[in-house]
Length: 488
Image 1 (cartoon, helix red, strand yellow):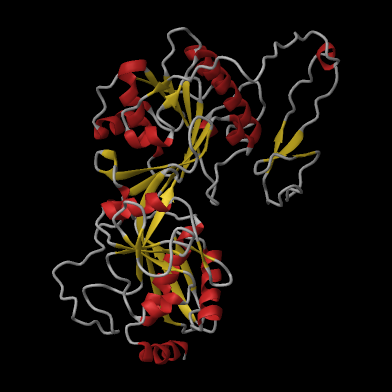
Image 2 (image 1 turned 135 degrees about the vertical axis):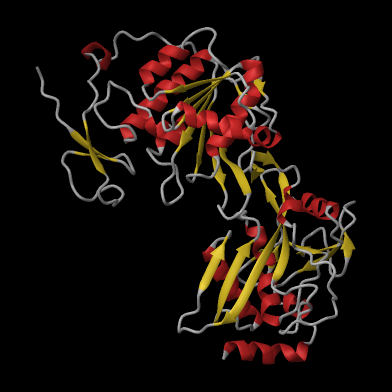
């Protein structure tokens, strides 16, 4: 009988090594090789291509039926999934520990259990722990099937029947194991094999399968990267523990739009959906009851602080307004400090360089602190102009008008380039009471003030980033002394 040789598989990239080494040659990760036994080789006849059956090929045209969807009743979750869960689909949900993944999925299982049946399988908690959470969320009376299991063989045997529940939540895939594989749960082969068996069951029985995945310290789902290719939808649950806001973001969806987001608010009784995220992210920005003419110790009025700009962004198909905050302080050390929350630090360095080179400002010699209020992370380049406006406002101590939204992409030459979905951004801003928009100078706009479409907003086009210096300088003669003061 042939001897089965062990192999060492990297838990980060999945590359196979003949012997153990301290560092993976594929990805360079340290102490990531785990010994695993290879699977048995296929029969000799199958290897030669015998014993298979011919496939029935069809053309690209033909009758097609839209896949049925199951509504959860949670509008934000249904929006991210493209209108509801698709029967027979596999969904992977990842997020930081304690962010609220189990809470959201237990609420979704309770909402859908009354109509199509739902099962919640946990490999991390005891039954009593899940029941305590259900009582806190107020869903203890829902007919959700609950079980604590980690064996894939037992799970498949329990669900492979005609009256299987329509929704199955597995929390989490890293705790599941196949007894046919000689490796510990959570390894690359176990995660891949367990997910393959569960997905195969979901496709065969038309079950909506939701897999909860752990994330690494880099913020990506732990395990083999092929896991994200095997499922139909990949959702990331984001948010800061210091904020009560949670963002559910779709990065892959075979049955809907990608980059769609759902906004939730964490409370004592679980997660509640936020139908108007813009109003939530801008809450607390205004400071009513203060005299606008009263001046702060830096020259700005107390009724409106400098270093703040409202950005009209697009998340998926939804326009969202968020506040970009900037603070500039003299650098006490030799190297200026950069602290960025909610935006790309590399892009901040580019905007700083453009302001220094094209506008003659001394922004880069100072410490810069940039924050996107509310815990939302912005990824689109359209936020360049809003970030630049916040930086110039903080440098000159001149507030951006409180009824103004800003968006546009900045090139290395300093030109402001047009961005997409202009009408949707302006309509969302007008709905929240804004009156003016600083937008890029494009084909549909011209120099001067004009109205775009029927949004009701007065637009003020900007062709070059240097125009921000003119707009955000109430006292032009005092601008350069202030810049020299910060540069010293």
